[in-house]
Every structure is written in structure tokens, then in C-alpha cells.
Length: 192
Image (cartoon, rainbow, N blue to C red; front, top):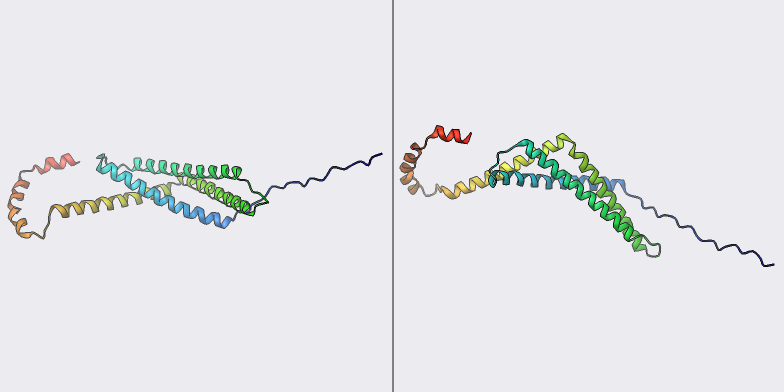
């Protein structure tokens, strides 16, 4: 009688667990919101300026608010796409116990996926935060007006050079006569 063989014991594989540093994630999300806020302000400021200068549009707070919400949506989708990309990389490059570098790389992918996902969630939450959206609109408006004011002042400085006072005085009478010919009430009505 042959002794009954017991099958060789196959070690069970355990899933590798990679702890995520909650403090690191919170700091990264906070910094990500700050960077997103800056990008949002710049994009909105440019939108206001282009609307005023190129498209001759009047400032419309409701339209600018909609633009801010749309930009926030785009930023949210960007972060969600980055989280999905990290997830694909995690599947494509699984950790291997034989190569310790692979484990640390996989842990880094996990950490990044969590950060991108958390930032996407926070930006999504901010879309519904009326105070955040209004603050972004107002800040962008102030920056846009400041930029427009700077451009107008520099163009005026190029047009009228008060340093050439003799020429300015000599041409003053002609400018005053031309000004009297302008129908100021009609001009005021056209501007309104």
C-alpha cells in the first residue's frame, strides 16, 4: 500500500495593503484647492477681459458665475481623470514582493490616486458652495478691472505726453474747439 500523499501546501497570497497618510492627503488637497483657485481666477479674469475688449460685451455677473462653475466642473473632471489614470497604472504595474522598488512605486500610485480622487471630490463640493463661487467671481472681476486699468493708463500715457508742454499748450485751443463741437448729451445717451 502506498502512503497517501498530502498535497504540497501552497502559501496563500495576501493582498498587499498600502496605508495612506491622511495628513499628507489633507495637505495635498488643500494645496490643490489653492492652485485650482488660482487657475480659476486667471481663467475667469481672462474671460472677462476678452469679453470686454474683443467681444465688446458688458459685464454680466450671472454669465461670469456660470463661467466659474463651468471651469470648476472642468477642474473636477481633470482630477477625476488623473485618479482613473493612477488606477489603470496600479493594475498595469502591480506590486511584486520580489522587487521592493515595485512595492514602493505601487504605494506611490495608491497615494496619488487617493489625492486626485479627494481633490476631485473637494472641487465638486466647491461647485455648490455659493460663497466660494461668488468670491471667485469678485476676485476675478477685481483682477480684470485692475489689468484693464493698467492697459488704459499705459495707452493714455503713450497718447498724451505731458512732458512736451509747449506742444500741448499750442494744440490746446484746437482741442477745446473740437470738444465744443461734440454733442455731449447725445454721446452720453449712446454710452448708456
